[in-house]
Image (cartoon, rainbow, N blue to C red):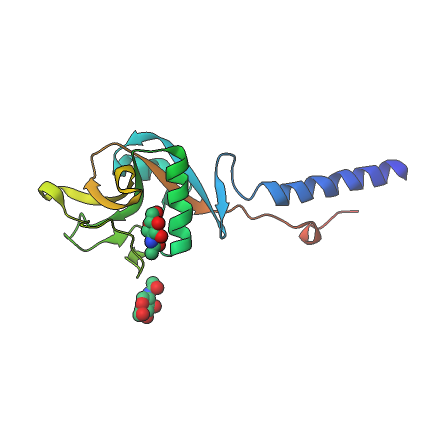
Amino acid sequence: MRKMSQLTFFLFAALVSLGACQQCSQGWTYFQGRCYGYGNTATSWASAQVMCQSQGATLAEVSTTEENNFVSAIARTRKGTCVWLGATDIFREGDWKWTNRRDFSNFTNWSGGEPNNLNNVENCLNMFQRLNYRWNDENCNSNCNFICVGPANNHLSAAEVPISK
Ligand SMILES: *[C@@H]1O[C@H](CO)[C@@H](O)[C@H](O)[C@H]1NC(C)=O
Ligand SMILES: *[C@@H]1O[C@H](CO)[C@@H](O)[C@H](O)[C@H]1NC(C)=O
């Protein structure tokens, strides 16, 4: 009996810690129901997108001030010179689209004078260190760090876990 209750307690503790700690994979940060990861290698926009997808995520998309503050804080902390986000106007100049949400939402955080499509080759969105991590359009082939966003893991609360007898 005593052994049994120890085992039950152990299972309970394990499930609680699972719920509390594993909303995001290690190295990813939880924010408002999703998990954000920082790509610590500077690479092209397309390659960054593929790396995000390899983790079941996509390049980060930002549609509120809160989300923008959160994402730019990651970029600032990690000190990326430039950090890709998941929007491009490569299919139609000036018509910015997020990868998932498609339409650019009402929120933007362009730096003054951006997007400027400099030399007619800037079709991907990043946060640029030199512009205090405000938004900038950049050549998609430039090498930048990147931020991915993916779903949080389904975490079972102890109450929802059926315990077999
Ligand atoms: C735009 O970004 C800057 C720098 O991250 C931040 O200080 C500012 O509050 C942002 N503006 C809005 C409207 O979110
Ligand atoms: C953008 O703003 C319009 C008008 O204020 C609103 O109807 C629409 O729902 C907003 N779209 C998003 C994605 O927030």
